Length: 360
Ligand SMILES: *Cc1c(COP(=O)(O)O)cnc(C)c1O
Image (cartoon, rainbow, N blue to C red):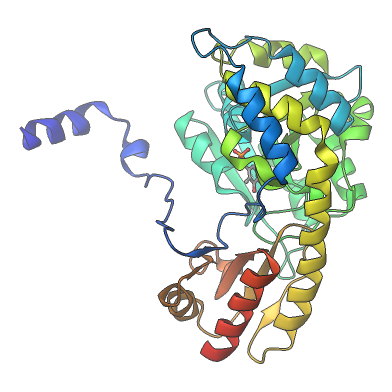
């Protein structure tokens, strides 16, 4: 039986899929969880009451509103999406990345992304049979502007992904360089703003009208609603209209629609939490900089990247003490001995800092 199934796999499944490893989510029960850029705070009690009430009223026997009209207008309002831009929702921005890549997956089409960057750009390129080209950052994680322009000229990518701020390095690239890249690119350029809530308002959202090929992508995951799985992207209506054809019906479930709509009306509560996280980021940065053996990089996101003498050993020692962060050693040559820690509550951050200085 197993052998037969294995033979079927060999015969049927594309070799590049067989060669993949599934996206790994480590078990985290009972741990201080600082690995996935979640907001560490619960919603304020008053908003949790609103959520209960809203959930109570949802008609679970009916399919969701296919166009998610209420949620879209709440998003447009809360996130200042330009009125003349199209807006599309995804089951997390991961789904939107998949839709973008499916849409351009002609034979021979290329996806280009900055590396080290968000791993799903490459993984989904493989799913869709696209060519993938990664352009490395400089040693200091700044954009290698000339190399990026040269790669765009050479590869003529249908899609370029730039995370702003970047994950896992945490920095913001120069806005004028990104603008020049958008102008030079023959295809769509997706500016992925998953971490905008922590980046002092730096965003390309207000500049959509300047660039017909710009897509601004966001998510509510890092802002405090990771459980709802809601991503969104804005672009010229002609582009969004085509991408909408690839969206599976009812991709945004009724609970997500109803809850997100109400929570967005009180989005200042989430912004207040983001502000606390940004304050903690500054504090943790300075504390880390004071631990000998640690090199910490400036971040405009809700996490910090740090380099230690032996990242795998430090990662494991933290894990043994029930603190889960992300080990990036081996993920990319520029990330040798790097770790990524999500900013948690003040108490969680203290626990992390104390254990880290003990270990080192
Ligand atoms: C976390 C993250 C995403 C994915 O967010 P979801 O909406 O939860 O799928 C996209 N892009 C970047 C850069 C991220 O770090």
